[in-house]
Image (cartoon, rainbow, N blue to C red; front, side):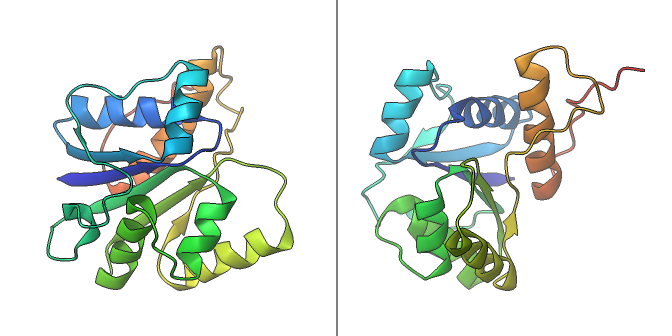
Length: 178
C-alpha cells in the first residue's frame, strides 16, 4: 500500500507525526510533504517526520503525487487548514498538497481531509460539503472521550485510528477502559 500524506499549517502536527509513525511501522510506503507553514508549526510543536518516508518539496507540483499516473492508494491531508480545504473544494491546486488532493478526486481515489481548526465559518461547511459530494471523507480532528483516555497520546490515537480506519489500515490504537 502507498499513502500520500500532506500536512498544512494548522496546529495538531502531533496527529501527522503519529499517523506517519503507524503507517511506516505497518510497512506502508509513505510519501509526504509539508507546506512551509506546516514546517513552521511542526518546529513550534516539536514534531518531525520519521526518516523512512519519502519527502517532497511542497512547491513541486511536478512531483509524482501530483500525477494520476503515479499510483497512490490513499491521500490524507492532516492537519488540513480551512484555507486548504476551501482551495481543494474549489479546484485550486497551487502546491503539492492541494494538487495531490485534486488528483485523488480526479482519479476516484481515497481522500481523507482532517481539518483541525475551530470554529468553522459557513464557508468551511460549504467547502466540506463540496468535498464530500466529490467523494472525499472530511474527518475533523475531534477526539472522543468515552474510551476514557488517560494521556494526550490516547486522545491523539483516537483521531489517528479514525484516519487509519478510513484508509483501510488495520491497527488497534484505542484502548477502551471500563
